[in-house]
Image (tube, rainbow, N blue to C red; front, side):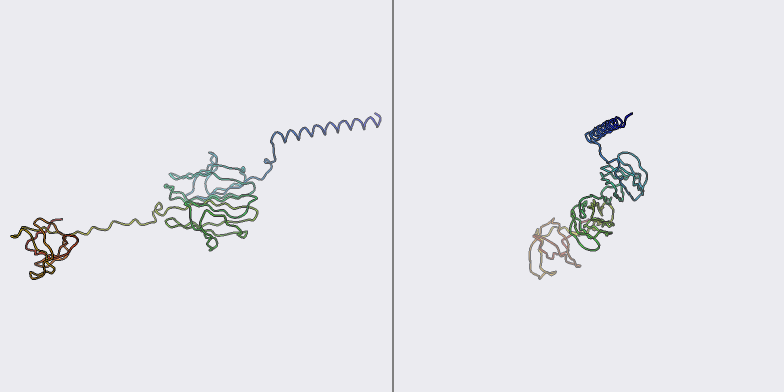
Length: 276
């Protein structure tokens, strides 16, 4: 075949291939395909006390302590189950990063504690959310205020976090910060009452109050005197049948509470003890 005809034939083939490639790329883009299939998988670490079964999106993954670095990025539902205790949460897995779930399980949900940690690329700082709200945040011994709180300018690296609140068990854990990501921490504190760490005050023993009843007198009443003596001033009178609280007594006299919280002495001769 002449050389000029061969060149013309090759040109037609290359032109056809170019057209096919353009249509292929257009179809790929319009179909909504992207390169997520080639992105890095996400990692997940889960610890629990006691050890528990780990489920993700309803599928059993294994037991705690659990670790995998071959999981699909995105939002997932994680459930931990151990005997009568369980915990379920929605977590975010980010490509090429580690998400951490730590949980202390208990039959009573209010007695559970733990933290979920994950990273958001393209953002900065450390964002802490707590249950209950208003916990006090201390990082590396420095007080940072109350949760919920976004803390900026923590140096990259490891830090010790502590959350406290009256009536709840203090929670401590470690974080690793990076300026390339925002670290999110969702922390749960356990109730001291639910954990049984608060001693319930026992009811105080009831003090037995002694009472006397006024007997019938020749006058139809009984004089109340300032002191335990017949010569002492009369400060009031009580009637037959009155039941009076005893404050003090001697062999012959009884100091009682009468009237409007008044105190005085009456003759024991005209009283009898009331059985309690």
